Image 1 (cartoon, rainbow, N blue to C red):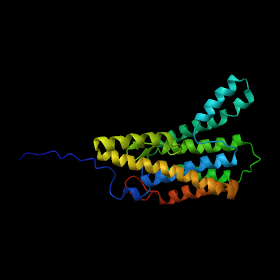
Image 2: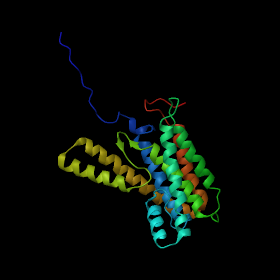
Image 3: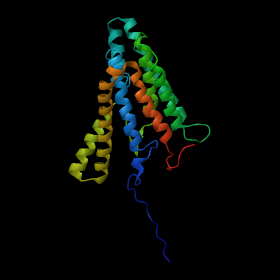
Image 4: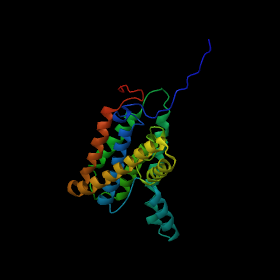
Length: 236
């Protein structure tokens, strides 16, 4: 009798996997992207036009102020950058725990606690403290939850996701690749979720003020309770 090797086809995400929350699920990706957009709107409205999620602006302004000899203004851009670096390092450490267990729920809980604390910090507190805390939250989030199904993505900024969606749209349209069509719809959803979070923040933050950040905290807390392991089992 001739034995045949049966190759397992990659049919993409499992049926129904888009409707449960795991570390790489679409549902969690959409939620995190909304939180990312909301936090950008939050710091922009409450902290004088500052974006804290990404560090491109801080790096550029650090260089500009140093070139202009404005050392004090240059210094205030260093703490958020350092907070971002520390957050990435912590996320990478938690990806490889000494004892094998899923730490995703713990990461989400850390974010919830920090955002909850931020809601108590009055506007008279220097912006550098808030932006550093949010930079830390954003870095932990983007470094730990860096996969959307099998693709790398960013849940705190829109640029890379928009590029991926555009690339996938082109390939889906001109090569008729079904996998690229799936990739396009996933990443378009992430971009729209980020936009929705920013839009929601623009409406809510002026009304609720600094405590509006608790909306993001409660969203993440919901994910903590609904989170499952990658095999679909409820995490203990």
